[in-house]
Length: 279
Ligand code: AMP
Image (cartoon, rainbow, N blue to C red; front, side, top):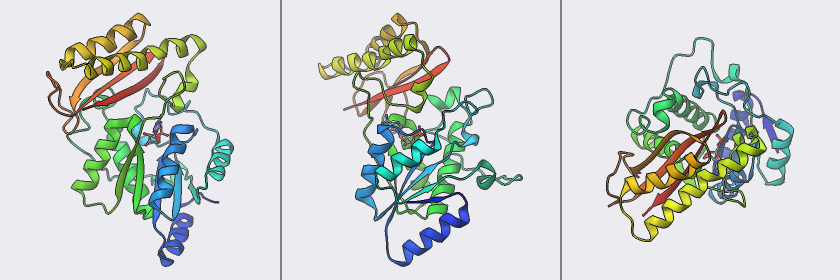
């Protein structure tokens, strides 16, 4: 496995691969890898002859009061996990390598980025789209894998790729959970034992709402209330709970088309997200 720290190193490697007609699949991550990330790597192996995993805590997708500095990092652990799972190359640049001092070009998706996480994190998806397009250009990947854990992100990236004719196939991967239901996230490590216990109310609420949907309930507000009840009982502070149309992310009253029930909730200072696709 190769570890590339610079754009030049990564480019040299992908040029060599492409000269041999190898297909390249990319898994973009911010590191501190868990089984959710590894599930993406497994899918990437089915899409390309060479798998690149990028490890980059992208500063431009964090707001000024967010957790950029304390975001968990463990490079050696990530290298070991990649090695074990047959990753061909890690791309792990520094922020200076990715962003020139006078960097001034941004990719802004102006519709799907606005609701949900876009409300409390107004610059988030601009940072995500910009870094993802840069990663596509640097790795010259044929395909890239994104998790449905970040459902809005996956939709925004799909829209960007369609709108800008980016020649990369976007594949989405199922949300991977801990045995007790908590959605796997690098941020789970911030949780104290008490917060970890209370955080389960989020997945429990989502599952309870999904069950109601499967029994025939079609009122969005009833499903939202089910999640709300669960997290409020556990003292979670709600950022949002929404039931939106899956393609437009516009709010639904009645769930008469494929929908996304999604929530962002704080337990202590840790903001967690979870979701389920309905229909
Ligand atoms: P992150 O490192 O949190 O930026 O995530 C990198 C990629 O892994 C994104 O496409 C995420 O959606 C995906 N991912 C993170 N957690 C999970 C999970 N629990 N299940 C599936 N995919 C995930």
